Image (cartoon, rainbow, N blue to C red; front, side, top):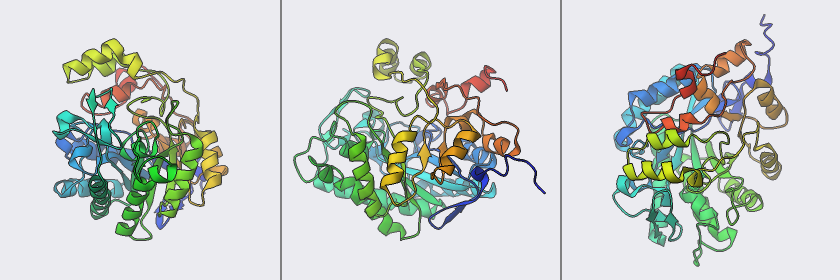
Length: 400
């Protein structure tokens, strides 16, 4: 008889996401790994997710898989295509052997794409200067929109073929779909701009095309901003309406996040800004100098608070008939229990599992009741220096 009170927590009860059965309610959030040099699947990427799966999560999320060659923001970002299927099958097999499910984020970076990586001018909702890249994107034509809609659907088919149990459409954080939703980046005057209904047209077409490609049962999660985090960006009232529209197109669940990578990059994370480390790890000398001189202008500081997105997420849960998966500042078992108790069927955790891949198993065993991640965010800087890892743990700065 199991008398461990932690193990009896509803957080460790099995749950269902559509037709997918998951062993508990904790999902590893998509956290950019920086382990896909030249867009490939590496042994490092596979082992990273194998460790997280072995650590007890219900599902791990492979982050930022570009659906097309021109949707990449970095050279060490995964590009989902036929060529990488054998490596992705190795990854999903490794995760499944540890008893976890695997999801993958489908994304196009739009105007945030790197011209040096993609070899062309980036595409966006409207012509716009990206100050992070110091490049101006071109405005997508109707043919471009149709092409990228099919690219998302094709990538979803490849993900299923590779053995993934779910896909996560990235419609937030200032990437391409988010750029169409945000009035700050979408200044179009055709049927894809202006009213929210028009701005939603392309993201809705993407979700609908993926649903048709994968059939009615396959889990299609959508990450969406609650707000962009600055005046003139997407705000929660329009975000709620957008979420309802994506539900109608076949989304299985919504993950309400926040922030705009090109303008409010740490709004989605909160905590310390490791400007020096971010600058030191840049390969481009101009980018290194820019971050050293103007880093605090590009990357603002937002104080961390536990569960900092809960109030907005509650509004999504009230507005939708599909599951709302919580993300944002969960560090303890008690916090996760409270979220599950109030109606969030699953909770996504990111940095805490970078700090300790064994976190979920240790919570279940009663060895600890919360993560000691201190939101130093140096793991973000490490993404550009060989792959994400907990710098504090490596240096022994945090001790249990």
